[in-house]
Amino acid sequence: MELLGWIIVGLFAGAIARLVMPGRHPGGCILTILLGIAGALLAGYVGRLLGVYEPGEQASFIAAVLGSIGVLALYRFFAGRN
Image 1: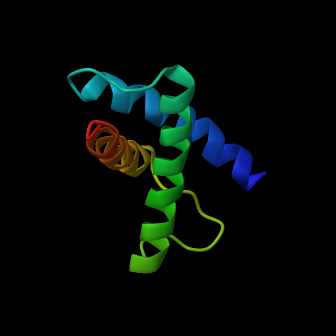
Image 2: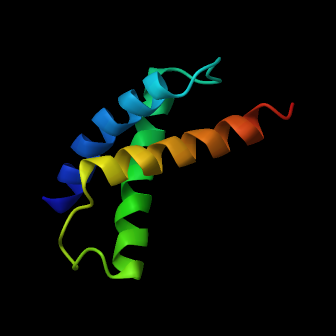
């Protein structure tokens, strides 16, 4: 059930990250959703490493959005190098 929560948070976090970041995005909506999920998972993982979140506790929505923005920025950096 926890993974489903991460996916749902990632959906919204990815959409907001795409709206917040200006410019052209080298991917469609599905890719943005997947990057949002990765950002939410990253935010939870980093939060657990830093001791902000306990095991089984999800990252906050703001942390998920920030993680999604970071993952999307990395993707745009590496995808734009072609």
